[in-house]
Image 1: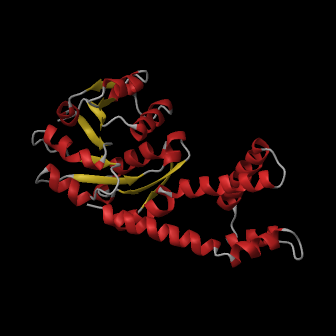
Image 2: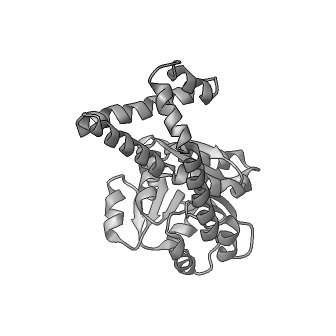
Image 3: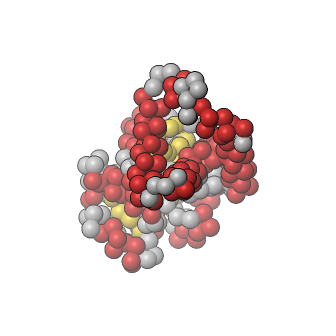
Length: 269
């Protein structure tokens, strides 16, 4: 039986709003084919301007949507499942951090339930993010995998991989924006200490990170060669790089990611 809506979203938080804006403003999905539920009227009002259907009835959303996207906090998932009164959706997309596919399937009940589990990051909110996704349950249907990929691609780069790697995704891209923000903030502080105004240092630091990332994206050669391009023998950059290496810059990053991944594994259910 054909569903009334192509996409139903339970939960209308920050990331759900980003997905809605990406899908609708890009003309990928008609607002009439989307329905969103949330217990908060205020949150629903924040997305009503997009023209989507809104409700506080999770069961209605689940019963009438081809794809059901869970965009709730993990600790609220059991409450959401209870609100479905035993209804078992066929196609599920989840952006719940740490909640594994088997947990979702077992919670929703017996039967064939296909789940795509995603790990988006904060820059997805401006369409420049990274999304790791395991959609292997849908591999037998290219229409489904294309829909999921296109939906997520409006948020940024989409990387399809096995669920076992999603904790590593959390360590690199999920939490990674915080590392980048810290690096930029440190560059700005350093610039101020060298006599620049904070606004001057911010322009230089931000554009340098953007430009460096773009060069890595385009380059065919290894990153190590890009580093050496900047490091002229006897020049200024090589002195800075020596300090970063001697003070354990790479090790600090590796240790930070290790700690993040370890915690992600502890929180996974």
